[in-house]
Image 1 (cartoon, rainbow, N blue to C red):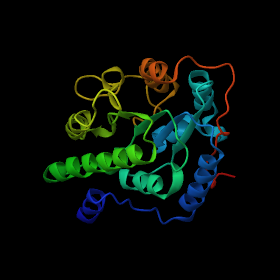
Image 2 (cartoon, helix red, strand yellow; image 1 turned 120 degrees about the vertical axis):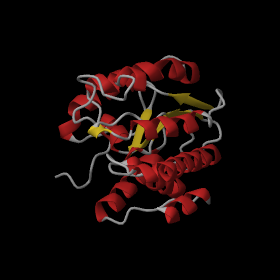
Image 3 (cartoon, one colour; image 1 turned 45 degrees about the vertical axis):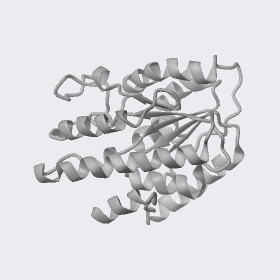
Amino acid sequence: MMAVVAAMGQGQGVPRRDRNSAVAHEQLLNKARQGGIDLYFAGDSITRRWGTSDAQYAAFYANWKENFFGWNAGNFGWGADSIEHILWRLENGELDGVNPKAIVLLGGTNNIGGALAADRADAKVEEVSRGVEAVLGVMKEKAPGAVVIVMGILPRNDRGTAVAGVIDRINERIARMADGKRVRYLNINGKLADAEGRLLEGVTVDRLHLSVKGYQIWADALRPVLEEVLGARAATDHAPAATGDPGVK
């Protein structure tokens, strides 16, 4: 873990080594090269499932189109990514030449995991916070005209609420990275969970990944910022078509 922290502190990401992730990266590079994206989503599976062409997530994609069609939105999330993997993908072409007007970032959940020893909490807060900061740095460099909306890490209850305090501490660090102008901070946890981090009924499908209800809460929170940055949604949309998991037949 310390090697990962050091790498991220130097602004360097870590690639995924599995073949499916390599194919997905090429798929996302091709999407980026097509252009036409004004609204760019970056993250892991929580982001990816919302705007994917995978048939099993058709209801999520319908919600995506309902909320973002006309804003030319492209989804660049990839499942199981930790923050250092998101960083690597952005460093290696997935944002090159896209020039979006707005970026939405949600990452770091997989770094935390579902359980965490008490003596590892401080290191985990540092790891994820520095990773998000490095990702923001790359986004500012490669998309200098974009407003970045960085999301607070969402609650996860797939192994209870043991990591709720760590999530809160990381989100406090992330909030301080926002200037209210070019970088905005958005935390929807109060609408997804109670004060102890217990997720509300129906907002996830597995106590981790969002349901349609959860995605709609996210979309409702994004809307005022997107309307400010992008204006009203158009009647047409010219973003590239959605992509899916290349490992799904």
